[in-house]
Length: 249
Image (tube, rainbow, N blue to C red):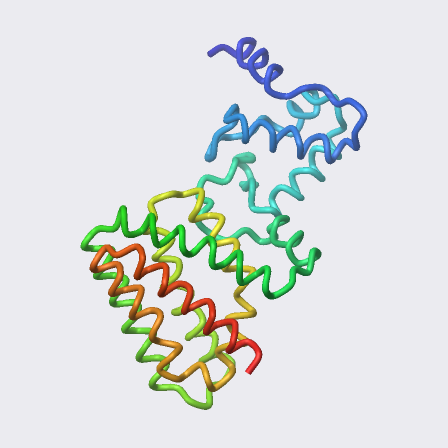
């Protein structure tokens, strides 16, 4: 594609600014272009000067918008190379606006329980449908590691609590990946990120280190081996219920 043709193509993607702040307008244009798949992950964006011309805004507005998008983890600014749409969204963004909106809404704990229950029940359904033998081997290994951490630690310091927390979350991350649906996996990872301090709080309660805290994971594993959706959903219900009780011990 020649330079002239490329500019015509870009002009069709980026529309000149109307009644909106310049910075927000740039951000929304990038967002809409990503949603419509006119710009793809890993793709290089036009230069600051080109974007300013295409969007009819100042280079300062482009620069400020790029800083915000970079903070969201949506773009990567590579010095001496240019600006790219983030290709690997598996990692955590520095600041997730959806996460921030959750924080501001201050949902009741019962609402959080219902959200977690709904997501996890559907995830285990998909995981049972799509699991492989290798998935099960890895999930068992993760659960064994988690059990060893629980048995070996009584009066834990903060670093040890964090180690246990990451291992517990890893079990749930693996379940989400077994569902083989990237969109659901991404939403669930976001929800777990929000739940993280709540899970940590339950771990700091010594009642967590009882048999009950391990039983749901064992039940989930058993259900996955048997490909038993009903048993898996019961295990999820037990897990969320125990977690809720541990929060207020």
